[in-house]
Length: 467
Ligand SMILES: Cc1cc2nc3c(=O)[nH]c(=O)nc-3n(C[C@H](O)[C@H](O)[C@H](O)COP(=O)(O)OP(=O)(O)OC[C@H]3O[C@@H](n4cnc5c(N)ncnc54)[C@H](O)[C@@H]3O)c2cc1C
Ligand SMILES: NC(=O)C1=CN([C@@H]2O[C@H](COP(=O)(O)OP(=O)(O)OC[C@H]3O[C@@H](n4cnc5c(N)ncnc54)[C@H](OP(=O)(O)O)[C@@H]3O)[C@@H](O)[C@H]2O)C=CC1
Ligand SMILES: Nc1ccccc1C(=O)C[C@H](N)C(=O)O
Image 1 (cartoon, helix red, strand yellow):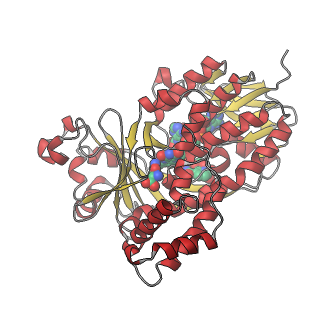
Image 2 (spheres, rainbow, N blue to C red):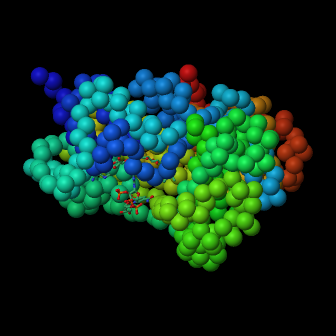
Image 3 (tube, rainbow, N blue to C red):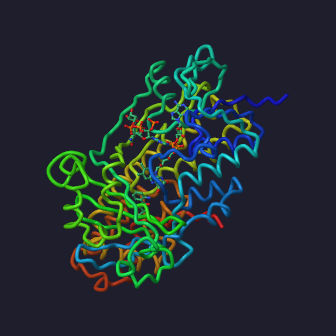
């Protein structure tokens, strides 16, 4: 008989299903309890967004699970931000120097279903339509409710909660022993709309006269319509459509979701603020009136575990705002770290070490995700931001061992998020200093700038590349 403990995972979403695969592959006995029906039979029932940006951290976790190539084949490459200004012009701000540094738009439902298949193939057992209701941590038992409302009690000496931002396991743990929970609401909400495939739009609306095959606008980009205090973004889907997300203050003066309660009011707003986007949204009225306004918040906990009895991972432990496109990526990194730690250690040690390693990084990406909202909705159109970005690129080309854009550290490396935050702050101060007298990066003496950089900051750590 195996000496490895039996593990009960709550939640078979993105993080729960990948974690189940990683643990089952290592020989753990894994049962996953998911409150929704099996999406492979019932269809995928919504979720927090239609599609997601997959970056290097998430990809590396998928590689270690042997799933990366399969996922990439069903993803759309995004080379950079296509910024759409109010005058109707657009321009690409690349993420990296070439296509080795791109992010990928993947379908949440598709990804979740491939991960469920992979976890089952590795030996994990899934129990759908089983929602956690309560847990008795002293007795090592939990209570689940099925779709018909029948409640049953199961043994579960070791519980892992991957049940998302509104985690029931977290509530049960918190009631047993205070976890030091703090939720900071952003005060902005989001609503999803859709640009359909080009074939559903009249030809005169299509960019480049329809020269993007089945896509109405450039497919290989993450589109942003920055408007200062709010924005729209669009991520491509493989079938030719784009999922558009409007981010806007929830309450307060116009424009806010409160002042745009229905499609009629919102259409006037879009005609004025997103004039080039509105004609690409033929189902605007129905989408606006039927899709909910999602809420956004950051979750901070002092404790992620109850000794070796229960642990929280992914959004259940550290939900963040979506603006860096890193919530799932961070949760996927969690799964690799936790599976390694559990292999050969008792759960109490593994859980404590997991929190020690991951919490500073979760805090750091939470902070950077909040900052990226301001960057996306405002700074991308600001000359000062563009000047700093340009000077940063020049320094990185001249002294790559000393300068790397923070965005690159977060998105394309495995450097700790906490390191990226700290190093990024130091680099940002240096750029401000170098651009104090001139707002033109071409006016900065690069030899002097590189000498200052090397005198101010230590070299970057050596990079571990995914491929
Ligand atoms: C608008 C938006 C856009 C985003 N875009 C990106 C992006 O581009 N890139 C990125 O990396 N991240 C993105 N994120 C973040 C990403 O969605 C989350 O980080 C990710 O879904 C977390 O996965 P999870 O498995 O921890 O939680 P979830 O995906 O929420 O899964 C939780 C699962 O637990 C189940 N569950 C809940 N309660 C119970 C219960 N009581 N019993 C049993 N099961 C239960 C749920 O049904 C669900 O299946 C975005 C988030 C939002 C809101
Ligand atoms: N929204 C956020 O960003 C954060 C929320 N929280 C905490 O979470 C709790 C609830 O948050 P709130 O956002 O208001 O509501 P929910 O998390 O309950 O989500 C709102 C809606 O989205 C659905 N939904 C959520 N996650 C998924 C998923 N993975 N797949 C499919 N559908 C999903 C829910 O369905 P269903 O009801 O069936 O689950 C519900 O209809 C609160 O206690 C809050 O403090 C904490 C931090 C961040
Ligand atoms: N997926 C998202 C969802 C919502 C808001 C932003 C994103 C992003 O991915 C932004 C991207 N990382 C960027 O910085 O351009």
